[in-house]
Amino acid sequence: MRAIASVNGQCLPLAEARIPALDRGFLFGDAVYEVIRVYRGKPFLFDEHLVRLRRSLEAIHLPYSDLEGLRRRVLRVIHDYGFQEATIYIQITRGAESSRHHVFPEPAVPLEFFYVEEFHDSLEPWRQHGVKVITHPDLRWKRCDIKSTNLLPNVLAAQAARQAGAYEALLYQADGTLLEGSRTSCFGVLDGKLLTAPATPSILPGITRALVLRLAREQGIAVEERVLRINDLPYVAELFLTGTTSEILPIIQVDDRLVGDGRPGPITQRLQQAYRQLVQAL
Ligand code: PDD
Image 1 (cartoon, protein in one colour):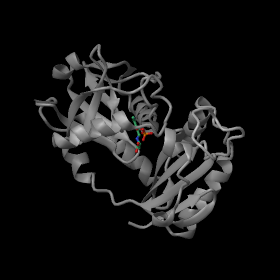
Image 2 (cartoon, protein in one colour):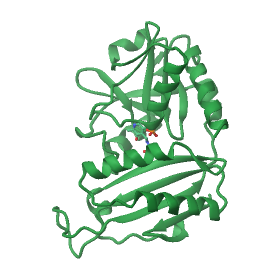
Image 3 (tube, helix red, strand yellow):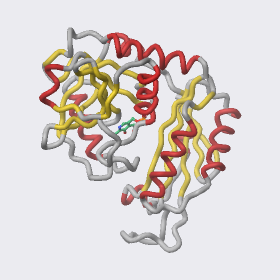
Image 4 (tube, rainbow, N blue to C red):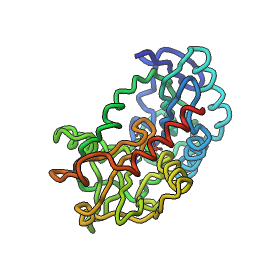
């Protein structure tokens, strides 16, 4: 797949991009990131992603502030290389130093890395027919609102889902609270109300999640930011995932149990339609 990278402003094919071995993103996961979808050459919700990136940077005290320069560099790559359907991956790390120390280097010289990659969307059949998910314990830390590259618990949960023949793992806490997927947000319809976990430090405040909340309110759908619990699962009428590349993905089975009648539900489909319209109007 065609992909162009930029390392501190230097453009090159992604396969040729090099990051120093002592970069703190590599050594410590001392880095934050974003993933943005590009439709027909236009980044979707770019401002929202940059606002979240700024928030993540501030949360880990990473002194990188050139977000407007970053935006220009990303747009230039999309334009100059003629990307149409693509994803943008952005990662800012606390840079490298001459030897490994946990404490921040003084001064820290952040590393700006991004790449734009062609995107072939293979999820459309699943958006129509729905996916299976598993439940999996949430082994993450207490600041999941920071989009950090420390993704080992997410990686292990995603792999467990793959091994179970499922698309995603829904992460639950010891008290049975269902929070989100390993790489997606989660919504459910319970007693006619659309529910999703509130934006606390226990979840990533998904950009797609915020958009879906807005679309639901605009559609007059009753919405509440309230957690679902594992015990609620037998009673949910609909369940779906949201994410930048997943968009809105119906869930038709959790572990061994069907959701509702095992088909994507009407609220999910209405929201998918509203989402599509928004993307088409971009
Ligand atoms: N994942 N929750 C988690 C834990 C995520 O990692 C993501 C995004 C989401 C959805 O957020 P958004 O709607 O802003 O994409 C929710 C990205 C895409 C990834 O890690 O590849």
